[in-house]
Length: 300
Ligand code: GUN
Image (cartoon, rainbow, N blue to C red; front, side):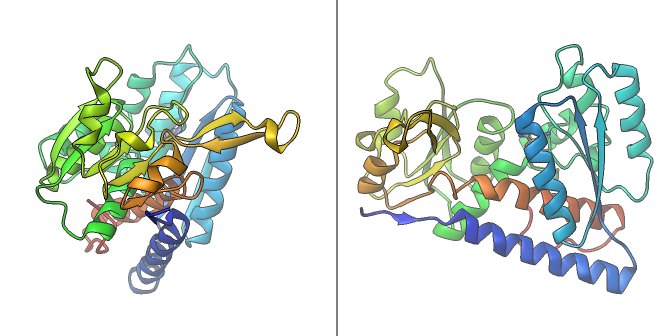
């Protein structure tokens, strides 16, 4: 195996330490404790795990965690009233409405009802527009985490060829904007892209975010390229015993690691960075709300 492994677990621990240090300073010097409100509607098991982890890590960083768990049949009116209350609560600096929402709720309407200054997911249409025009915004957590790892590995990304595979609003599109902001030449590839292997082979940076297990093989990777694997897919693993499963990324790890210069593993790569960046965004939002200097290295 040739590639350097980019350790997202260790990197995210450093980000969380930085967040905790800044939170301690906000408390000591200004008497302010950043607060993150997370809203969960319904009982989706994966969402429950995410929300629990978010709450735990928020408290570990010294911040206030406010959790609202609503029944699956909650009306849109009730949910919008809660968001409005959180928008107007000075103790709340960040608001996250866990997705997906139950089908009867309009996700776009709910997300766009969040105060953009508290939108720590960076999903509000105002933040999307600000990011797209290179202005100060709240940046979606997973692409922000990928950018931090890329900057840490390369130093300067200027002039590099980057291919983002996947065009989702949550990862692919904002990732492309961030790479463009760092002066990469960016291609967004997707399911209709012609000759995907050739497109990927041109890239110095490959960000895979499609949700298809091991779809990128090593022979698509340019020697020495950096591979950021956003995919988290659970597949059957009969070799571990009957009914067992394991997590894999969107890239075939072993073959990509033979060719790449650096690669993020799954698990332990991009995954842990997402919550770390959520905490970072909450501190950033708190500093902006109070007219205080933002911590270095925690924003795009
Ligand atoms: N569901 C899965 N990932 C996310 C995320 O990053 N933010 C929100 N709000 N919901 C999610």
